[in-house]
Image 1 (cartoon, rainbow, N blue to C red):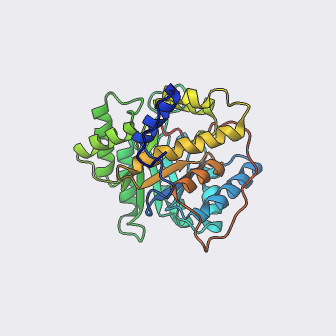
Image 2 (image 1 turned 120 degrees about the horizontal axis):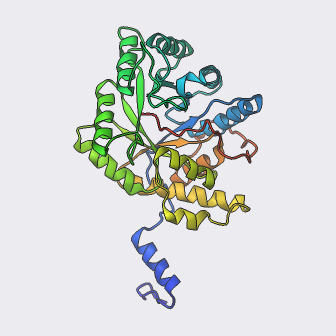
Image 3 (image 1 turned 60 degrees about the horizontal axis):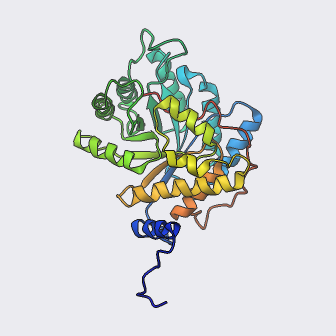
Length: 344
């Protein structure tokens, strides 16, 4: 066959393959040399979990993330565990650490105390979220507390004003498919703009699977006058059933084609992981084609899929980074404390 010979369309499968390759070639080299990544962990609840978090952080640190973050339960339910995890990461990994902070169920004085504790640990980046109300409540705010994430951001800025931490970074949540409690997409965008205007430096999105969902949201945000960086949140599929449960709670859609890809793989974990890494990397590649260069990975404290996705993207360990053995696989399903980011 000569170089100019057409590809024979002998079967529907061959035609479909030809069409797919024509639509989106898969480059064999890294898509960009300036991709930046960050990783999110949740605070462990047991000594075994603490060891797994340490192993996860060590496995991903050689990728030189711009920062790693540790989640914070609604109403401060994981405050002590979050602080211990942050102290551990700050002491052992040479990467910036961000702490999550919610305001539901907390007074402004309590929130100020958490900020001071973070600052004393060396944290210079806070992920500010309103927080989910306790079960059975629709609001969850308390007298003397912040009523919204925008108020929380403004309160953080006031708290550090005039101090050496005045340049504190503040990230907030964003919702490509609309926050489940928002009355409309416009109201949700207005809320995001209020958070940025209050002093947030970037937004990190809820996870999603269709790149077009994020790109439409990004266009809408820019049209609404939001100029701050908006970083897509990427969640590799460690457990497909777990992802579907998360998505149902936070309003994220799960495309039907994921059923086709992950159906029947419950008893084939190695194949499932290869498919999951490919899906996450393809998602990032398509976003990078539109100029996205920052990605925030929800690791669920399991580094293998995130590390594999980063490698496909060309984000490799730096030559001077110490090597780290992969931690033993955690066969349990996603933790209930895994990031759902339903709090605005």
